Image 1 (spheres, helix red, strand yellow):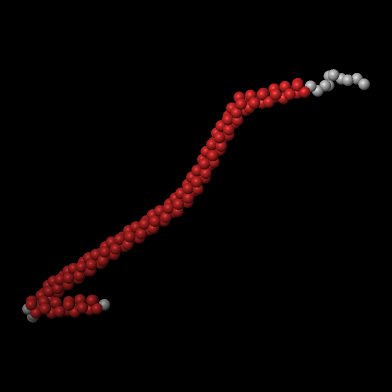
Image 2: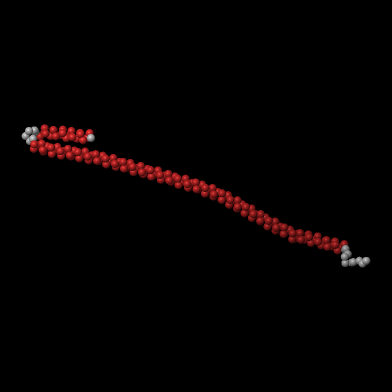
Length: 170
């Protein structure tokens, strides 16, 4: 059989390769792995900070949204209350204006009634006076010599009073 020198195991070569590998690993770890690890840690910290800020902003937004939703509900309730109060005030005011107008109208009617009554009494007095004057003139002409003027006037006044009392009784 033949021996193959190509596939031979050389212990020194293996040890040197291992030593090279260990030295290369130490160099890479010291100069490359350390800074890369620091850079990755810094990036992770930055990302964590950004995520925390985003979560905090989201929580603030949710809090603000609920706050403003409450405010909107309160504003709706307050606006309804203000509208109801304004409607009530307008109703009270209109009732007051109507009541004042009725009072004024009643006052005007009472005043007109009083004035009408006064005018009626004046007219009655005027008519009585005219009747007395006409009756006196007629009576003077008819009875110019039988009854004196004072007696005649008293008779006519009593007749007119009787007629006035009869009209008032109706």
